[in-house]
Amino acid sequence: MAFTLINAGPSPFGRKVAIALLEKGLEFGVVLDTPWAADTITPGHNPLEQLPILIAGDETLFDSGYIVEWIETRHPVPPLLPADPDARLATRKRQMLGERLMEIAQSLIMEMHRPQPSTDWIDRQTRKINGGLAALDELYEHRGCAGETIDLGDIAVATTTLVFEHAVRAGYSPDIAALHWRGRFPALTKFVESVEHRPSFAATRPQEMALDLAATVG
Ligand SMILES: N[C@@H](CCC(=O)N[C@@H](CS)C(=O)NCC(=O)O)C(=O)O
Image (cartoon, rainbow, N blue to C red; front, side):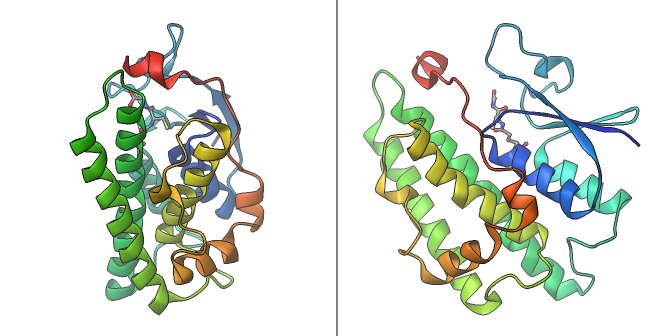
């Protein structure tokens, strides 16, 4: 089956899908799109008007969490979810924290680009990011580093934390203390450093794109 991933260069959500496909050895092509642009193709494929979108034969899939669930269900080998129920729930918990942290960070960064940002909103999202990172650090104290295999939790956590750094580096986000996790959360740091050079991660590093977030939310 031919897969096409509609994605944006820096998207951590799209990177999560790309890494899952690569880990499974599934080939795919990439079409880049900007969901806020006048000529975007995204709404034609996803009523929620968000990337990533995966075209899988005659099926069109959207929302990265659903897409990776679909990939895991249709292509279970090699597994990215453990079969043991307790291990599976632990994986899902890390996946959920990684995904929600990304959405909260997005909300914070967008707020900071508004003409009159709300300090209360910024404080609330900042607190949630610090809390989520601390919760992940505790979970990785028990899980440790990635070995030969990684799971959907590892992929969600690493793509989120790595894009925090990319967002600051590329200037999409102000340099907010909450987005700094490397060194601040030792177990989380050790874990990300154990996966970030893996071939599936090396092949999908965030790519810069022209982004005017102030114009998007202003
Ligand atoms: N829950 C979605 C979030 C995806 C998301 O926020 N995508 C961004 C690009 S990285 C987007 O398309 N934003 C446009 C919008 O939300 O209108 C997922 O996991 O796929």
